Image (cartoon, rainbow over all chains, first blue to last red; front, side, top):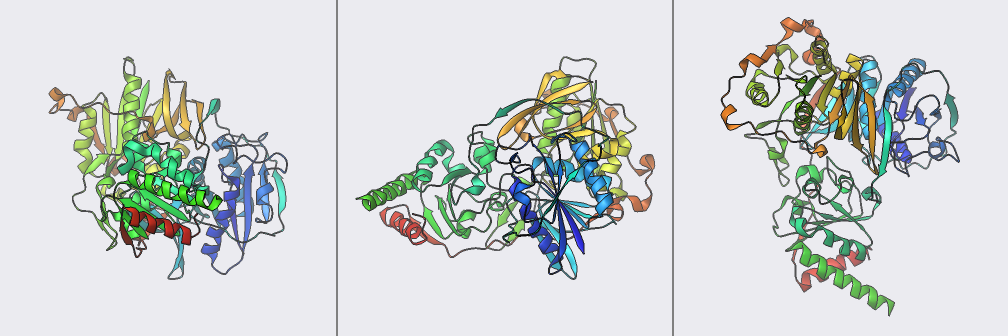
Length: 333
Length: 264
């Protein structure tokens, strides 16, 4: 039976489960054995991503993976890529996994290629799809900032390795698997010299991937980006941005949609003054409804939309916000 | 202090256009540029060097010989030495092989730190810095958004990395590989007017497989552990768009749409 190892998503541990969807696509109908490696305490993660002390780091993965191997920070610090690479190498020697899947978080993207090199195996980065073609598994990833998709096969005798783009694969099975939790307790010889000196929390407090409604702004709303908040409030959604806004320093990278930002799948996406460069559209996945507001009805994003409002985005925000508020007021009376 | 910047000349993918109606990529007349993150790495090296007469910078790249004019421009800044690793046998090398080739050259050089970019515009695997780290037995850090120049010497570096909800200041022992992010905002100075035509050929070396000595099957696509079997442009699902005006009737249309779909 095929055996896979999933390395923990260091930002949002529950997203580790989504990588089971990758394995399902790789092995089609065949069953596979699933292992996960989780690390206790993770300083490169945000407050939602760190494992909860109450139920142990394996907590959220229980019921999804057959085996969860916990790595205590007394053995390896969560940011110690050298130590963790050694642990993964030891696990590979012991269990001979057919595939090792790593979420493409900043930490995952550093550790995965290093591990692949150590295991002398090929690795594919930032994977967005898996396809079966002519009896083999093709690993799909975007290249040239999402302008081209490349289908890749790996060679060599080692495990198939990839880092997987967060937010693209969704594992929807309910769980209910018997999970065996164990501790990794062998000594680790090599360690990183890395020391955290200071941690500053950033003020942005929401995750655009978790919102059902996104009000997204691009080059057309450069001067009035803050105005998007009114419509977001009226619709109880969140504000997101295109790269143009982020590159100008108007919004933080954490709310950027696109290839170099986040992949989002809200139910409703309102694109205000967004042209729709492919690197932006690449970050819009499985969206139920798209409304584009643009002065140019031929802007690329308009072809992808359900409704195109031809005109000024700020004027649109004011009018629609008023209309929604009038409706809400009417409903209350 | 010896700094080596490992850089790549890439197609300027932002100048690609895409036709969604016909699902085709327009790829004519693409210009080549120094990868933006790599430009930050070199700009960072130049900042370290400023005011330190004992500091030297070498710029190393792998690619076709056609990158020579780009490298010459970098040498017209304050870089001391440039090396192009170029050999037809290396064509088609994946990151596994590329990092091996670079490592073989770099292991012949004395350096305190390797500076690279974090992401490249073309492949964007971010594999080479990490794999170079494994090859050379060095630590590596990606996504660096600021370097503390006061605490940067041949022994250790202090720098910031920006994460989803925090900014962490790290200290790392050198030698190591530090990979800069575009967010750092370090920009290269312009080449001075009087230097436009300056002859820098004495500072530039081109080496190939005769110097590095790989066996034929070890490099290029034959030596690679990944193979791109096909490429295609993604098909985007176009929708039956309804075009409305930004007037009362248009707003009413949008409002009703939101109501019907249950967004209100």
